[in-house]
Length: 163
Ligand code: THU
Image (cartoon, rainbow, N blue to C red; front, side, top):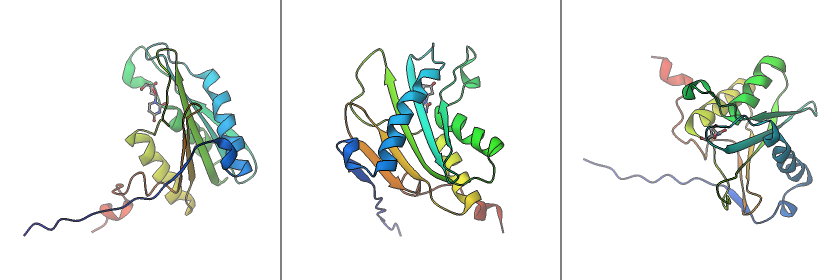
């Protein structure tokens, strides 16, 4: 027998950075700065990420493209792998993600690709605490989720590797 099931996710939507907590607002504004190092000559799509660590450090990431397209990497993973390799014991508190392109005006928050969500899930598991994720659109709204469970409810988890 087929059972139909529903899954609900929760997130917050803000119409302006002024509605966010002070630290979330600062991080969103920092993510704009991160776009300046984007290497995106092929898509013309710049993505910037700012990550707040428990120590107070802010780490930045931007998308890095390559002429051999699959060799490039999204901004989120650039930032997260930098943290994993440079500050492995510093907890990730929050991350803000923003994007812009010369081709059109982005009017909605740009949400992360599945591969980046999977990497966020990995670092949440590693540090045993959720990451506050902010998707910031300068000409639109801001989406906030406390932890990535709402973004990737069926995440591949370690329990699947065990009998
Ligand atoms: N991109 C990111 O940086 N993050 C995402 O979550 C999705 C896409 C980048 C990859 C590529 O450089 C450009 O955006 C267009 O896909």
